[in-house]
Length: 78
Image 1 (tube, rainbow, N blue to C red):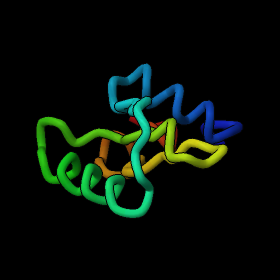
Image 2: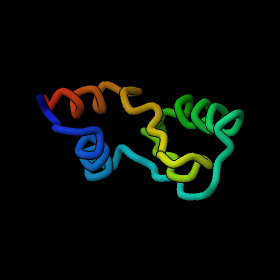
Image 3: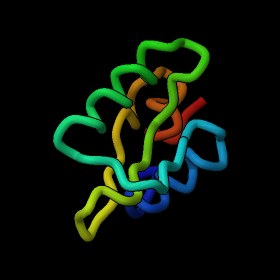
Image 4: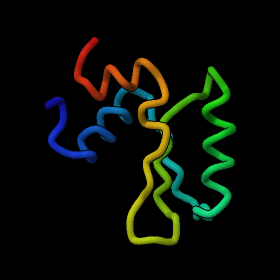
């Protein structure tokens, strides 16, 4: 197992420059899908997104497996 928790995986994505943290409130009903769609379709900005303020008590990680590089990070391989 490459990581003991999702938090460790998020930290690894962050250190690798593969994560964008979104701290402002984002409506989970429509806005998250729209933001993710735009980001994932842009080759030079395609990153995992961590929405930290969704109006709930927990953050939302999305697009974490959206590239070959992030898949390798998740599996702990080159």
